[in-house]
Figure (cartoon, rainbow, N blue to C red):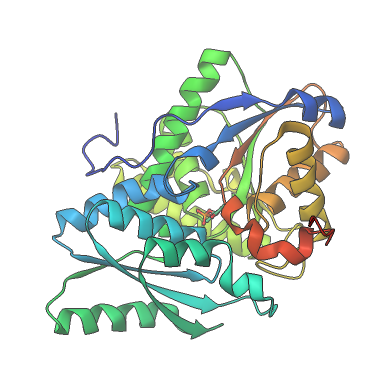
Length: 339
Ligand SMILES: *Cc1c(COP(=O)(O)O)cnc(C)c1O
């Protein structure tokens, strides 16, 4: 395999399932819908960052680091998975949390991922929204170096060429599953944020010359900016793999930013409906910030007729259900289940 010479640790429990969603397919009366269960990677409630961390943690260990530093929003799934991965490999961790969402709810600041971060055990530092967070990561690394500790910086979302290798590997895994089931999906749809997932998938798909279109549903940036970020990282990832970046033409990088709503991490009616729909038809939990908005995009595109009964589509479930309790106000009916 193209990626076998890159250092890698094992974090995933195994190949994640590719499942058919019969009830949802019937209910929407459109394409056959399949789901790739990267919510089930296995590390401390799972999610897509686990795949990236297999390469990032291995690189940190190869460089002799004793400490990893990363950053994210208060309810970052990436931060939670990074702390868990660091713990497993005996690395200390420091996480810088940007107060990117200001909704003031107690649950947002104390429940969900942040509660799990505290249980996993780490050093948490808070910075205001809009801070120069890369400068803060650098300053922290220098401070630790002065104390004689070598720190390894993992960028937000684990999205650099090393982290993206995790999704090159996922593309290979998925293509094998699609071949086994003899499926030819019209699209692989997923939530896109810091771009590493989509960039890795596109690089892996291009490397195998398979013709699987990828559609990223943006959770933050506007379409043009998101496509630019994904394209840049996918090109760099192909170069890192020793391949010609020209094998990925720019027009294959597709993002849709119609489902962001008011902004990153802010609930939308479509997200709430999508989370309830998948939970109530198939018993699968999405998340409020990423996969819920990504899935809301897929459901809306099906209702608009963008995908039809002749199509097969695969939704990549990137995880994140650990954040649901942080959004209790948006989901709870406030019924008093109390004796
Ligand atoms: C980080 C994340 C994403 C987005 O992946 P990127 O590689 O940052 O684009 C999607 N879903 C969940 C649940 C995430 O935590």
